[in-house]
Amino acid sequence: MRRWNLWASLAVAIFASCISTFAQEEKKKEPPAVTSYNVGYRILDFKYKDESSQEKTLTTAVWYPTDAEEKDYEYGGGYAKGKVALDAPVSKKGVPYPLVLYSHGYSGSGVAAVFLTEYLARSGFVVVAPDHNDDLSAVRIRGGADANLPKIWENALKIARSEKSFDHKKFEYRLKEIRFACDKILELSKEENSPFSGMIDEKRIAIAGHSLGSYTALGVTGMREKDERFKAAVYFSGGLFWDEKEFSKIKIPAMFMYGETETYGRGILGLSDLSVKTIGAYLWCDGPRFCLEVKHGTHMTFCERVFKENTPEIAKEQVRLIKEYTTAFLLKYLNNEPKADDVLSRKDKMLTRYYYDFGIRYEVETKKNIAYYEGEDADAVKHKLDIYIPKGAKSFKVVMFVHGGAWCMGDKDQFLLPYDYVGKAFAQRGIGTVVINYRLTPQVVHPGHIKDVARAFAWIYKNIEKEGGNKERLFVCGHSAGGHLVALLGTNEKYLKEQELDFKALAGVIPISGVFKIESNLLGAFGNDKENWKDASPIDNVKENLPPFLLLYASSDIPGLSSMAKSFADALKAKKNEFRLLEIADKTHITVITSIGKKGDRTTEEIVQFIQQR
Image 1 (cartoon, rainbow, N blue to C red):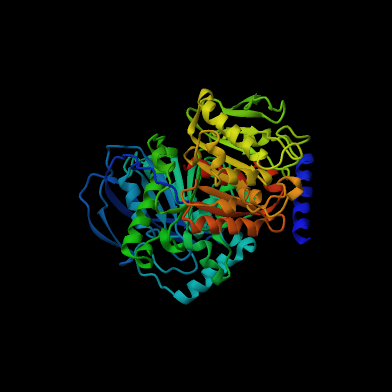
Image 2: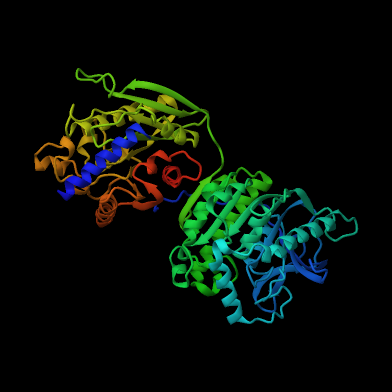
């Protein structure tokens, strides 16, 4: 009886929807070629008055391209080592250069990430990084910090834990200081007798920051105020003291990075999962956006402590990744370098998660009610499909979408909320989408539904190239009963073989709130033959060498579906298949599908990324 109640609930929920509503193969691409310079380095002291009219010094480190010979150099009294030409003249080869402002974390220093700041200067950027006047400092540009490490740790934890109660007014000085440093270096670039005369292109300025420095960068790029000089921003590990939706204030190209261990290690310290907050911020940004989770990364991976917290081999690879992606991002959005896309569109081996969106949106062309099966028993309504084409895209990837409805309800053109919103959502992102119908119970029972799904898939495979699609990158996605059917297509190969295809034709399978085990004649859709139930159960057909799976379910899904998804994931894992299992927060069985295409929707983004990166 309990099982019947579960499935009755499923039927009711789907009926309501009908009427109301990584381990991929890395691409072998090299970083974009950049002009390589030697690194010049100067330390400047800028005087300013704070709100109480007290005079303060903003000691600032400046890295820049030079032709002078480099020598070994120790930063901050031994904090970090590098190679620079101290107080050398600026190279005239590439002037004016783009400018990057860098804001360090709480109690840190302008020399907090020498591996990155030196690399950017070698790549043709000027980097300006002030020592913020925090109440405590563990390191300073010129050395000599009076570090009270226990107090620094206590304060840092207090700041990190504050989240929505974060005291923005207390840290306004940081926003003023980073703007002031920008003002002063631009003044020096304008002065004829300055060593930096003519060095900077004022139209090409970006900002980057780590931890509380990420907060500083966010603060001046829209979250607290909008400094129009900044054309792009990189936010390293935290500083996200706002609700997700507020990040729609970020209108410039944005790159977020955080460490893998920050998704689980922070709980011990009473801190929230940084991946949830960072991905949420990424989803709501308005401009081109990128979000990277660094393998084995910690909060300190983005500063010089990376070399102390990991083995030399891991640290070297983490540093390489941070330098390559940060530089590619800045080259693209400050220098308009087309080859930067080669880096930004690949998933590196040191990334455990990667989301990217170049901000391109396609106009959608729709072709409706195309027959995919024309046999004697063809149905005039149910053997039809709609194609959504991203106009102008070439050899685009394609996803076939299968609607839900407990195998006995639903239609691509259903009343009130037809599924064209799904087709348009993905086509706008450059993914061709085909939304299909299939016959329903009581007209058919298993295997009638899956045979239709296989027929539709075969038609798409044979015909999609005529519309500009790539049949070798053909994915399937379905919700609820549709999730069951696409999962079955990706596990029970006989239905593809009936269409003279096999698993090689499937680039990936995406069940949303799917059903993976059939144990009864659910809603009359599967008959009374137990062998039929086994044939219809994706979990009973799992074997090795299946297509990759992305398994999504809602945090408030129908009882039993989440545990079924986890069991199916375990079965895939046992046979060494590629999969990812993800719970979509703050969604129900219905809203997990009806939210597709809406701003900030996680389901949409996960599907887009799964397809983009294969």
